[in-house]
Amino acid sequence: MNKLFSNIRFYVLVTSVLLSVVVYFLVSGFVPEKSLQIVYLTQSYALISLVYLYLALLATPLTRLFLSFPFRGPYVKARRAIGVSACYFALLHAYNGFFGELGGFAALPFLNGRYLVAITISTIALIILLIMALTSFDAIIARLTFPKWKMLHRFVYLVGVFVLLHATMIGSHFATFSDIVPMVVYNATGLLLFLEAFRFDIYTQRRFLLGKGIGFGGFILASIAFLTILAFYL
Image 1 (cartoon, helix red, strand yellow):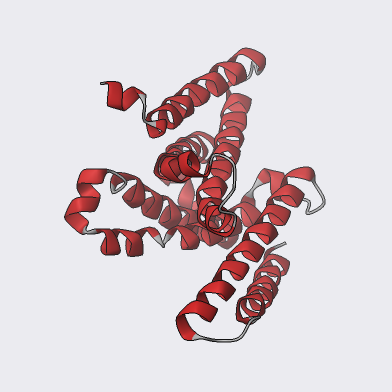
Image 2 (spheres, rainbow, N blue to C red; image 1 turned 120 degrees about the horizontal axis):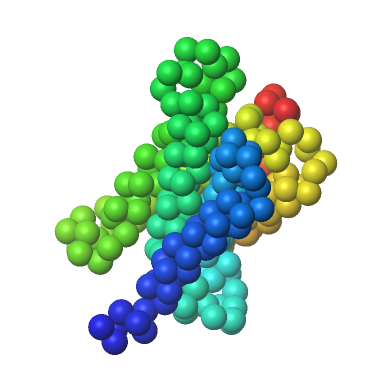
């Protein structure tokens, strides 16, 4: 029991559950109309899930590039719980959005192609997140072996791409590119890509004895591809 209460993952998970409850009661208390409550809950849980997902993605490049980063150890240890929290809020978002706002499976035949694509890729992302959450425990990792577990959890990058596409295509906060939410999200994504490119640059130098700049070239190509996809869907 003492080991549980000294584990930062426990506190991350408890905080996530409490946060979801606080959000629910805040929305229920300040928004009188039931249909609007569902909308606000869907939006709130989506944004919180996005923050958790970003923190999970940021952990590796940030802690490996900056060895003196404050709270580096606890951050790395908490990463699994952060990923599980991202999945938890994604499930809350999906439930409220799909069954609350859209009306469930009965509404699918009436949706246009854009919505169907957005829902499809978000469903794939949610399934991947759920698999990763269910395999985030020490006993499961021991059974899978760490190399296989690590390979499986690299699909989180695909989740990040799918989530951004989903948000860009049908997210209410992403209707206007110049709004505060998309500006923060896309700038944060640019920072993540930059750090990952820098980390990849160091990796290629050490592993393959390649010259500097390989990672930054990849960053430029990835940025062009990312902006092309956004331009297509905006």
